[in-house]
Image 1: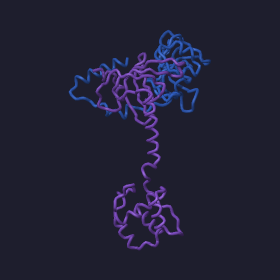
Image 2: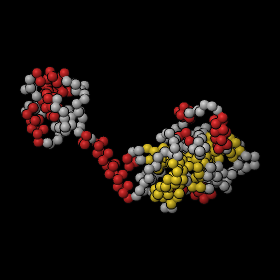
Image 3: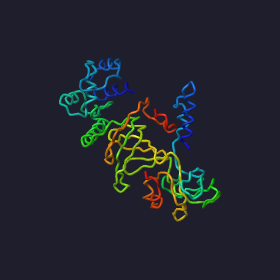
Image 4: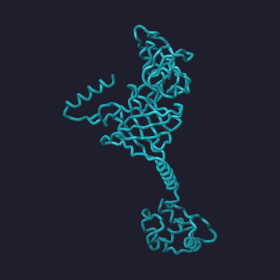
Amino acid sequence: MGSVGNNLYGGINSSAETVTRPSHCDAISQQIRTFIQMRTNLKVVDNSGAKRVMCIQSLRGKKGARLGDMIIGSVKEAQPRGKVKKGDVVYGVVVRAAMKKGRSDGSEVQFDDNAIVIVNNKGELIGTRVFGPVPHELRKKKHLKILALAEHIV
Amino acid sequence: GTRGNPLKLMDCAAPRVEQSFAEPLRSCSWSPIIPRDGVQAYGFCTRALAARGFSTVGTAEVSVEDEDSSSPMVEHPPRIKFKRPDKTARHIMNILNKEAVDKVRTERTIPDVQPGCIVQMRVQVPENKRRESTLKGIVIARRNAGIATTFRLRRLVAGVGVESVFPLYSPNIKEIKILDRKKVRRAKLYYLRDRMNALKK
């Protein structure tokens, strides 16, 4: 999805005479990524049926949720036949965050997008598959089922 | 200001000195004179300078000069505008940093990772139960800070872009291997976040 957009961009650029220097738009396009808070749109990366969820409450942290925290969200976009429908209020676990998370050995990790996995209020998964990479931080938060189903652990 | 300090010093520390001593002091330019071991022979300025710069160091000739010029009643420590370079904390931290870096470099060789390198590294993360994982990606930034030098690695993991910051001298990094070095004209390649095919040529 993202790569197709990039290919088109590269094609258009090569046909034009002038080369646009990318440094001009850096101040606007490079944002400082912060917490996941109310009204944040998140991608859903399991097969529970939802596609986009808007966060309505972060269950941990005054400023917002980070990697590995639980949020409450409202389903904004869903697949036609799934376990959740549009307009449902669901709990979710943040598995990818665009805000960097520090680790104990001094390294930091950050992803390119914000993504959650839908759970119930006890923390158990609703879906049966998880797509994309998940970080190690879930192990400490005791979301071992998500780690077991994940494609790749970062 | 810089002009005021030497006058005050002369006033309180050396009242016996004639007024004529102070006149040439005012006229000479103060700013480029930094007290050092090999201080230039600005004739009339050297004595005042020596008393100002080296009062805390116990070298023989300097302390004798200090005794001579300061009066017995008023004991003011001369104001030190610039410390000698090897007494500043910045210098000591530089030495400590260099020592730590040298110690790590003798234990294992760390290649020169620069932005634009495609790098493959073996890391041992403590969260992964001591199992070594291989990471391969492109270095998009490098920040030099002595022992805390970090570099930023961008890689595509299962279709999602992941950026990680690693300390270069971390003991968790078991091996770094440089696969390729791309020619880039920048120190920080953040433009790659938008276009991943920019470096494929």
